[in-house]
Image (cartoon, rainbow, N blue to C red; front, side):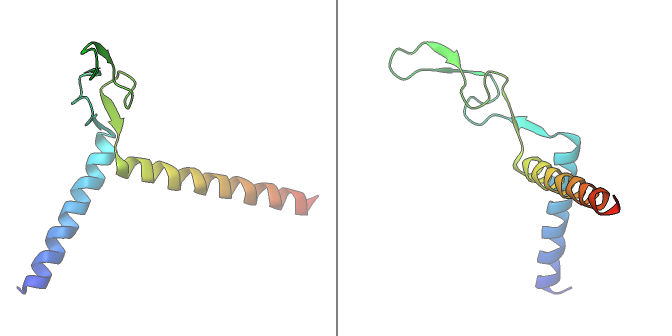
Length: 90
């Protein structure tokens, strides 16, 4: 096996694993608060909710966010196409 083939297979396997991860577990730990949902403020050192995850400790993965965007755009395009065909048949 050539090194290029090995690199391609490794990259493909990593991509498949990430797609499955986004499908099975769409939420990952928040990197700002390490999944705790709370952070300490710098000035007074008091505990507050994490602003990035809004206190849940979870964030939507980038791959899942991309999938949701593409899926919503396709659904809107399908709805517009159906509406257009309904207008032309009347």
